[in-house]
Image (cartoon, rainbow, N blue to C red):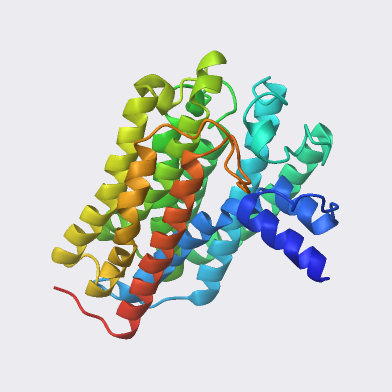
Length: 335
C-alpha cells in the first residue's frame, strides 16, 4: 500500500509514475484525467465560495450547493483534459515525437485507453456533470446553465474543430475567462444565489495566475507548435515576447491584489499573497532566461520547463489567497 501511495503522490505532483514503478488502476486513471492540474480548479472554486463570506458584501452561503459546484467543476476539468487529448490525437497533433507524448504518459499513445474507451469515459463524466447541472439549475435558476454552457463552449472548442481556439491565439484568453470569471463568479452564484460586479473583478487575480501556467506551457511547446502550424499566443508573439508577457502577468497578480485591497473589494488579509513575493525574483529570472540545454537531474516533466515553475508559483499564491479569504471570513478587515 505504501508503494501505491507513493505512486499516486507522484502522479498527482508530477503527472508521472516513479521510475520503474508498475502501473496500478488508480494511477492509470489519475494519468488519463490529468489530475495533477486539478488544484487550479479546486482553488478557483474555493475562491468563489469563500467570497460569499469574505467579500465586502457577505451573503448567506449554501455549502451543499458549493460542494456540488466544486465537484462539477473538477469533473468538467477532467472531461476537458480528455477531450483535448482525444481531438489532438485524432487531429494528428499529438504524436510520440510531439511534446505532449514526451513529458508524461499520453492516454491513447501510451496505451492506457483506446480512442473509443476515452470517448466513453468523456461521455460518462459529462453525464455526471449534467446531473449536477440539472439539480443546481433547479435550485438556483437558469444562470447556472449560462455559466456552464459558456465554460463548455470554451472547453470543447479549445481544440475541437471548427474553432480550435488554441490554434488561433484564443486559448490563453479562454483559459483566463474560464478559471477566473466563469468558475469563480459561477461558484459564488451557486453558493449564494446572487451575483455582483465586484465578484467578477475579484476573480481576475487568480485568472491571471492560471493564464501564466498555460502561457508557460505554450512557450515550452513553441517550436513544436510553430512547426505544426498551431498559432498559440507564444507562437504569435514569439518566445521572447511571450516570456516577457508571463513576467508581466506574474507581477500584475500582486499589483491587482493590492489595488483590490486598497479599493475595499478584497479584505486586508488577502495581502497574505505577498508572502510569495520573495520567490518572484527567482521566478522572473527563470521566465526571462532560455531553458536548460539538457534535462536537469531528477526533473520529471522534461522537455517542459517554464510551465512547471509557473504552476508551482500559482499553486503557492492560490493557497495563500484562499488562506487570506478564510482569515477575512473569520475576522473581516476592509480599507
